[in-house]
Length: 88
Image (cartoon, rainbow, N blue to C red):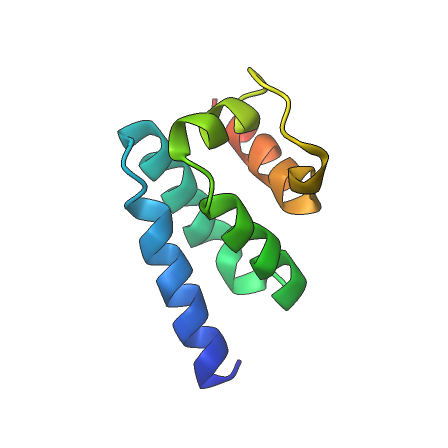
């Protein structure tokens, strides 16, 4: 892993734990701890794009309460959904 990739993962880890909503912080923080080290650059792009969404809406997508726009239906969102189910 390059220094730039490491810095990116650290930045994404931080953003995952400080979204603004405690439930989302806990879920995304745990997901980041578990998966950030193994995500590809493309998956990191998708994850970063998901983090740009306001956290209450993202949480409804992860929990299946709302259907996200097509552009956000990525393998990373599926991983988040599966991770949430495994945490339940």
